[in-house]
Amino acid sequence: MKVLVVTTSYPDYEGSNRGMFIRRLCLELTKQGLVVVVLTPRIFKQSPYFEEDDGIKVHRFWFPSRETPLNQVASIPLIPMLVYMISGFFKAVHLIMKERPDVIHGNWIVPTGLIAALAGFFMRVAVINTARGMDMRISEKGLIRHLFDLAARLSNKVTVVSETMKKRASLKDAEVFSSGVDEKFFEVSPDYESTTVLYTRSLEPVYDAETLIKCIPLVVEKVPEAKFIIAGTGSQESQLKRLAQKLDIEKQVNFVGLVPNEDVVSLMEKASVYVSTATADGTSIALLEAMAAGLIPIATDIEANRQLIHHEKDGFLFKPKDEKDLAAKLFSALSAKIPNGILEEKKNGIKNTIYWSNIANKFIAIYNQAAN
Image (cartoon, one colour):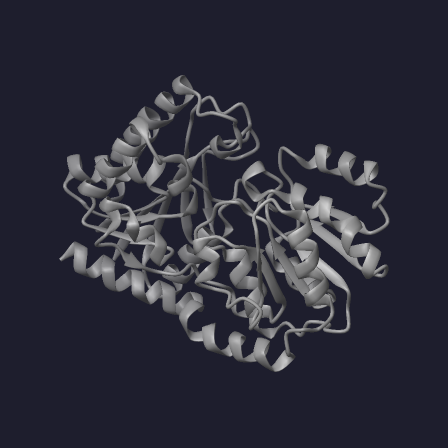
């Protein structure tokens, strides 16, 4: 079987982490015997228009990106988005004619899932679309909402990454597939004696690392030896570093920048607590990785996270954008109020459901069903 994966994000060059989990899914699909062709936008000049990535054919289409992913701009630019859609659609049609895929798999319904749905509709190829967290944030209303619903209607099957996403009318019949986690995270042995806190999300407004930085002085008052590792980059990086300097917590915070996925494991082995401050999210892969590693998870009290964390039993939830509440939860976590045995039990409980091999097998079953 051959699948054309049309995706908003895929690693742009060696060392890039953008869309790393899409690459991991594609690698697992190839391991299971599928032929995988990827279509993704070309964001950076250093990214080739075509490359072979461990047996995966990766094609990139042009649009005026200004070297910035669309999800990192304040508002969606109309002309670049129009060019994006047209360029992606014609490239998708070209690849369908050339590669003859049995099925198309769109990832992120807006915008690449819509490209996949339209190309599949016109070329009579079955389409599976996966809605992810960013979809729900940018398609709440207006034209984007109508385009989102159109893509869902044109798809043979839609999957979502969390049960809460099914509340959207166009997603009520979707199947819930968690994102996968590499097996290596389950092999981590956290240092529960450590007072190191780890953050691995992008430094973009929706992930709200600012609240974490603001809470650090409050934590250090009670736990002077506490350290914080900020692993990630983004448009707010300089602003956050200036804030850390202003709050005089530079000695407590280590901005390590972009860390390759395989090196995140070593950071987790130095920490005991993981924090996600995202104000909106689907099922966070970074949070799943932290739970797979056995870290104490602290995350915002939003619907997606409530499905993953039982407050004060196997982790903590805090009010979004509330640095005082986050500081209180961090103090509780650093005071070892979650027994190690509970964390191990949680780790073992999620193991079989989020292994990449199991996720890939579920997608292959849907591909076969749609293609037939």
